[in-house]
Length: 149
Image 1 (cartoon, helix red, strand yellow):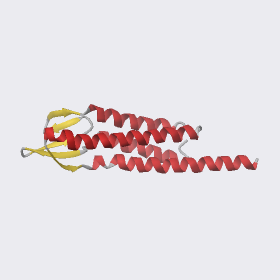
Image 2: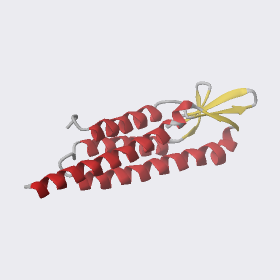
Image 3: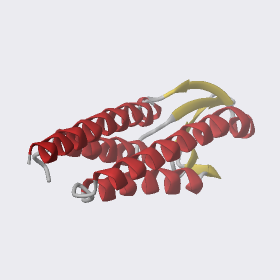
Image 4: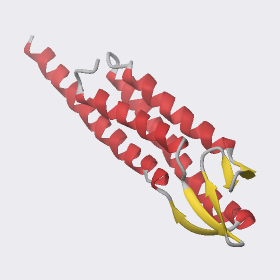
């Protein structure tokens, strides 16, 4: 299972999304105070200004799907399909993050910048695409070996 490189890439997708949902995603300014967006809510100091639990659920589902895809190493076609669905879910995560930052962020404060946690879903998408390429390469290798028999 962990002897294939695509498993490492899928594990990195899981780690990136897991770290992303627990890290700060964006920083905003509101009347001289800093408002921080993470996957749970907008934090204004210690107080919760606006809850964003949907973002957490989307990130958690994406992380779990990549973990499930690791254990489907015997069925490579299903592994590819699940990874493609995971990429779509990660894109939804990014779009919802942008929506929260720019549209809902006006309620809490003026958008200042994205934090390093917002970059992790993009890195996870890159790892997922690389893992799909490696799964396809592995499938071609298995098919070529079957022709030799």
